[in-house]
Image (tube, rainbow, N blue to C red):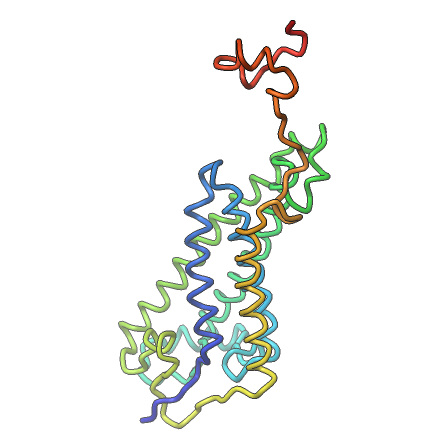
Length: 258
């Protein structure tokens, strides 16, 4: 038996960043005061997803989409021989491949509907121009966003269930450890090696990811997050109202107060 290096550092780093930011998305999604942070997390996930989709075409063996055994025949054969200790799939097995592709698709749709809801209902971000009298009452995209978020949880559970079942049924393959160490036990040496183009692309995308996060916290009023509404300084607008009545009526100042 051999230990083959099948998951490169960029692949493993993507996996854990993706998992961490998905968790942050759910943590920040229920509180209105955390909505801007929720949006930042969503955009960050889009950058990660862009990397992974690109990596699926230009990355190393086992990370490429063409190496995913996506066929009904492969899926049936895998399920039929799931108890076989000598599984032939080094990278993703057929079931994991389908779940992985579904996660990418659902994640993209979740981000897209989230950005639309952010603009339509909150008047913020790149679609803030849609926050007009007709569109801002439309909760369609928010509802779709929530449905997709729930579906994504289902896919996450399926993914974790698959990893744990593989750990239980095929512990000698060290599949769970491989996403941490990069190494998996195989019959032959199937180790991968990144070329300069792959290393350069991964490094650039990592810097783009970090730069976006830093920029978003330094400049929270950027085009991706800014509100179309300007804050109203009621003290300047009506100083007498603020001094006399604002303790009770800050949200509803009287424009005719004299």
